Length: 358
Image (tube, rainbow, N blue to C red):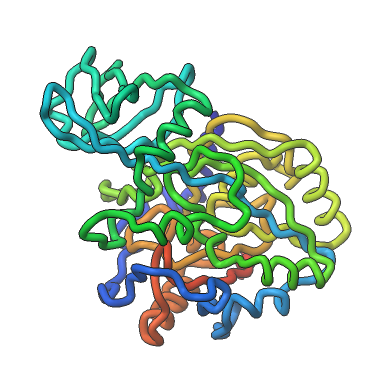
C-alpha cells in the first residue's frame, strides 16, 4: 500500500475548520448539465476565468497528455433481508476471494455468520462485523458477482443527490463516464462525467493524447473529515493500476515539455502514488491511501480538471494543496457568488499548479 503523506512542518497543525465554507443548498447539483460538455468551468491560476467545459481544447498544448480514469461504477447498493428483517448494503471496497467491505443499514441486525438474501440464488455471508456499520461480505466473486449486481443492485448515488425513490434509470447512464470500462468503482470519477465523444474528438484534434489509468473509487470519498486536526484523519484506501505503456507515455510527454493533466482527483492521487521523487511515473498496481494536504510537493501532475468539492473534505484540502489555499478559497467564493453548481453532477474547474515559492 502506498501511504504517502507529505507536510511541511508548519502544516502539521492545520485544522479542519480552515477548510470550511458556507454553501447554499440550491447550488448542489442533482442532475448533470445537458449536454455534458455544456457545464461551466472555472479556470484557476493567478486569476479566474469563467469558461465552459467545451473550451477545454483551448487550454491545452499539443505536447500535453490528459490522464483519465477508466473505472466503471457498479450498482453497489443492494436491498435484502436477514431472517425476514429488511436491510440495505452498499459495497465500498473489494478484498480477495470475492469478499467486499460494505456499509450495512441497520448494522445492529447483523452478526458474523449471518446470511443476507438479496434475490433467489443471490446471497452474501457476513464474515466480519466492524465499526460504523461496516461488514465484510463473501460473494461468489468475479464477473458472476458483477452480473448479479447489474440485475439486482442500484447505482450508489452520493448522499447529497436527493432521490426520494433512489437512483433513476437516467442515473445509470449519467453516473458513468463515456470511457468507463473496468468495473469496480462504487462512486464515479466525477470530473470525467463532463466528457462527451465530441469533446474527446476536439481534444485529440489539438494533438493532445489521452492515457488511461484505473482507480476504483470507494465510498470513502464521501466521508467527511471528523477530526479537528487534519493530521489525525485516517484516509480510506482504494485499488489502482498504471501500466508500463501509460507510465512511459506520461514521462515522455513531460520530458518533451508537455504537461500531465489529471482529469479528476482520482487520477491525480494515483499518479502521485506512483511517482518517484524526481517526478518519474512508475508502473503501479495496488492500494493507495495517499492523503494530500497543503505542503505536499506534487511530482507528477501539472494541471488538474476537477469538480467543486464539499466543505471540510479531503478533496477540498487536495485542491488547496494543488492551487494554493487562498487561491482556492477565492475561487470557491467566486463560484458560489456566480452560481456554479457543486459536487458530482456539478460544474468543473481547471486548476494550474501553484508555484510553491509564490
